[in-house]
Length: 122
Image 1: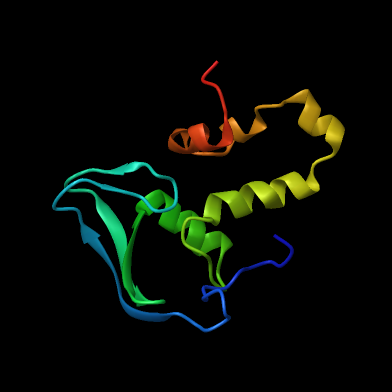
Image 2 (image 1 turned 30 degrees about the vertical axis):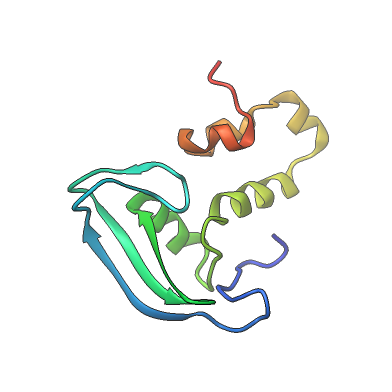
């Protein structure tokens, strides 16, 4: 990530129209669009309905919502928040620092994302 924030837009640069954005309680189990963790029945989560090449709805667990609100104040791309955080941290690390702790991402990423980053549970 080269800028301090990223914007929600389409591939052709058109802005996304948000139709509905609110925090609700889950009536059934869902998956968070950011960390892929479970949003259990009864838990609060953010639901956003938007228009971007058709109408879509995105669900974000409260921990990911709080991180996104604090770190991506100008906007974000759904499903890319954690990748952008990792990229930002990696940009500040030296090769020696990264080599000293090859699984440094496991201290930052939610465990539900480890499979995508090939992090072991050791």
